[in-house]
Length: 175
Image (tube, rainbow, N blue to C red; front, side):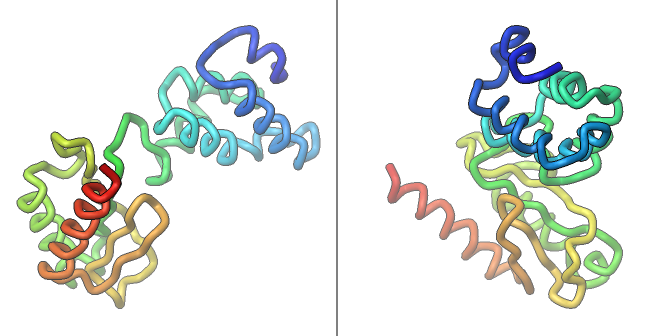
């Protein structure tokens, strides 16, 4: 399947995103087009906010991969959302070294502060709370990653509260 065929088959992705698929695939030898899977999933998420099962199938067909192979990539990495998430996705590291250094306490504190359980999104749509495997900052625990880009280290209850208030304030200023 090429971008023209994909455009004709589904309105799920914009022509611009499918053109971006083409550019990503062009970076690899023809017989290795599946190497663009992460880039294509990122493009899908940038456009739609998450990667749906339907989008996984489109990526699989486009890259000539088995749908389960694309699904394995989507589910392996925390950066791919499989359902809509809040404006701020908070991934708290709960791997063993962080557990030993208050990672579980940080997660519980955020659950109480936000009034949601791990894996849920707050009623206002601002926050989604997730646990994460190793973020590579064990000595800085507890750690969390905001929107897959901003690492926050040594997150005491006070620092967690400040983070939440700061993000809420930033949203209030935008309104």
